Image (tube, rainbow over all chains, first blue to last red; front, side):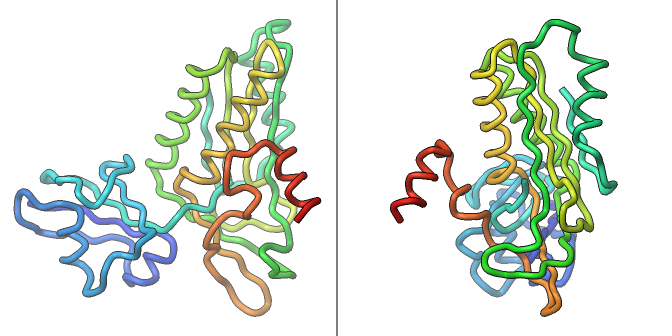
Length: 76
Length: 162
């Protein structure tokens, strides 16, 4: 299945890109996608959103999902 | 309800009166509780900040704030609320964020406004990158006294004693 992955703030800098499309096996979880895009462990404070809703690394993905990885927020 | 994410500079006081004139019935509210967050030229011991870049997650940011406002409208007996938040390049003294809650009585308005701005600080997907003459850096967390939903009197007491 195909997952659209987006990175924000310093994570975009680290990954060297703002977004990419990842082909991954059905049944994959968020953590599986991270392993596919990075050689290093996911930073402990990483926030995760699937289809623009907060979730966690165990979230099971569906074909076409949009997955966002980003650091703690600093708005307001 | 109104949520606006924009790059353009805005005048928070004009936003308040404009929305109020059009959407809040005359004589129906007893309080308009307003929070305006502006850019300082210092932060976390870094002086001489010349500019800031505010990143966000287009789509998720708007969706998240709409949900937070709806939660506030459901939780407290208030009439309406609006949020305007800048993104992109921001200069010192610019308004970054405006939160307004209209209510019949002030207590509900204060509580709902605090709830919304605290979420904007700690949950809404925005990220600040500050620049001064030494370069730029992503801000890693909001200021310590904003890190918890504590009453301002507790913060003031902690500062006096500590």
